[in-house]
Amino acid sequence: MATISIRRIATAATLLTAAATVTATADTRLQGGGATFPAPFYKRLVAEYQKLNPEVQIDYQSIGSGGGIKGFTDKTFDFAGSDAPMNSKEIEGAGGADNIVQVPSCAGGVVPAYNLPGIEQPLNFTGEVLADIFLGKITKWNDAKIASLNSGVALPDTPITPAYRTDGSGTTYVWTNYLATQSEDFKGTIGMGKQVKWPVGQGGKGNEGVTAVVNGTVGGLGYIEQGYADANKIPYGAIQNKSGKFVKASPESVSMAGAGASEDMKGHLIAANIWNQPGDEAYAAASFTYLIVYKDLNNVKSKEQAQALVDFLWWATHEGQKFAAELDYAPLAPAVEAKVSAALKSITYKGEMLTPKM
Image 1 (cartoon, rainbow, N blue to C red):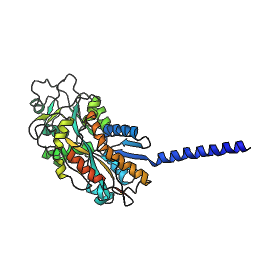
Image 2: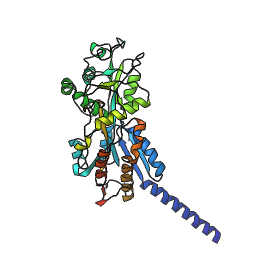
Image 3: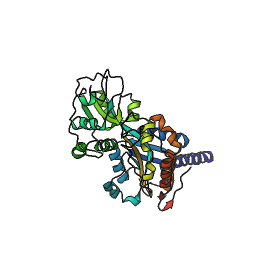
Image 4: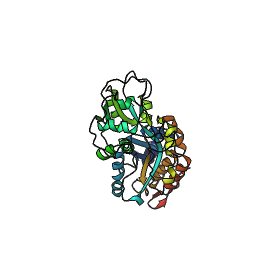
């Protein structure tokens, strides 16, 4: 009988230890979601971080910037990803600017991806031509305006099918804001935003949906994130930049677009536009993408979970930057990283400062 009792006590102790382990794991589970633009980078960051910190479980849902902001505002997400910085209405909905920390995590390019069998060399575009395509003014691939930019290329008499995002998207925000700098007609009719009304073309949800439209339609032309295009071997063209040079998106050309952006960064609600920047090597349709959390993390379950979130954000914007270029994103420049560091050091949990693990 004594032996059975001892065994029962030992078994109970084992179960309690296991329960405690499960509880600890649950306490360090972080839920984020939002932008599809940086999703491949974020998923790599999560995988690498969890190798170093197996006790922290992180899930990032690639559902679009609009969904990320909604999840952040209603506090179903511990952190959000958005390609567009929060606007005044979104900031108000989350309790005001003093309540939010928003930092760039990397930069990337939005590229004009197309489906034109037989065309091997990357095509050249101007912002004006791209705006006219999405306005429905240019409808054929052999239009004189496209042909003049691509001397020697036998462009087909194929209809252009513009492909666009149907979900609230930071990629759309970047694309429309860039095209609005190139065409007053585009600015006045379609406008800028994460979700706009397109007059022509076919829509798809996420980078995946736009890619499906492009790949499934000879003559399709859509805007997608560069890293996604490279990973899926989708052809895309060069865009003429502010200095008059035709430049394809790359980590280097996107970094050039972000040069000097740190001067516009202030406080803990950081935002800076880097599309249509000067410089011979700068890519025109470039943008930062952002990570967003509450300045006081009282929306999470415990101080341990809050600390885990701060530690992950610090690692992602510092040591984790080495993975950016591998996935065709531009890592943060040192001056930008310094502004991010200051913002992350301002995060608290129920008023208590949280020091990131460096």
